[in-house]
Image (cartoon, rainbow, N blue to C red; front, side, top):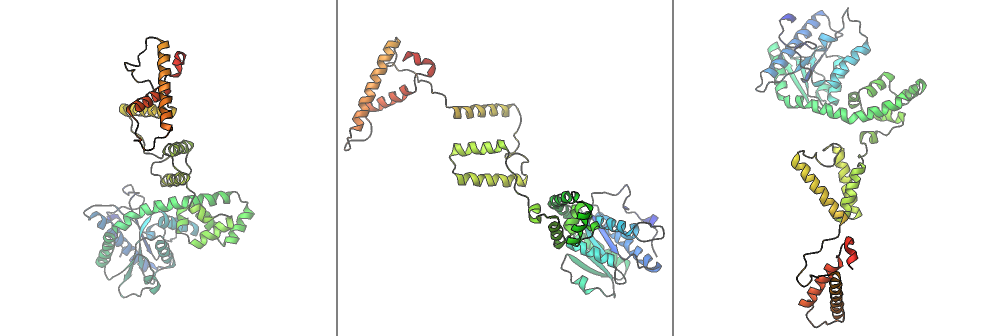
Length: 407
């Protein structure tokens, strides 16, 4: 009843033509309690499902690759299979938790406990699930009523089975392709939690580990896989996470939501300089500091608050100009004296001193007249007062320190 495997023209897991980056479709079915006739029937159905998955992906207008994985081919019990139950558990969990992007459950003779467990894992990971049932066979009402991305299909022939699988693959293509991104997000989200728990676990003695296992009510093998595989933490229940973290004395909320990163000293200095230059108050400065830490947590520009600068000769020239402008703005060197007028030209230092005394006298007289208070007159300065004020401002900044000997 089973087709000849040598005639199959689809990629077998582990062969050279398999694309390891392609989405994986896990096909769960009964394995342990099958008689010879049932094994041949399930094996033929699994090969039909594999053909439908590959052909549906290749016949699309935009071709994409899929990896169908059938445990009946790789982990079914047999006389020559000497693997332990723990090894089979690790193999199947690694496929479902770390690689599977969709699940197809083949219901036969009421299903199996292993397929039901894999159904629960896929539902907790929000994978699209297709449940296939032979026409006329009863389906578990609990499976059919599970609130998840579940599609239930019945078939009465190999053609109907092929069509149901191809339709599921085409309808769920976007979700299947997007699951790789969601899996990467789960790794990033739970890596810090797994690392923190593993560090505390490594410092414990054997007796203390046994005590933590008893307090958390978790098997030590289960604790080991949770700490070793971040995606196992993602598939674990919240009760398991809280129990293990409490037994280890850790705060799950802090590990899942780490504090915002701090600014580097150079970035803090730039913020302080900008606050002094633009006269920001304390509240505004703190608000900008918080916004900068949020942007660093987003990872928008890596370790810098600004986008990477462009390179090139023109950019280096602009950078040098900006540096000179910054230095001149902060150092504030004395202003140079404006060009001398005809009346201000002096033939000797003595004449220059006499002209400065005359200007100071005119300035003092103008200031006394203004301070005496003439409220009813026009407050605007006269031409003579305006010239005296201008001369005063020019004289105040002149001469520069190197020319003070002329005073």
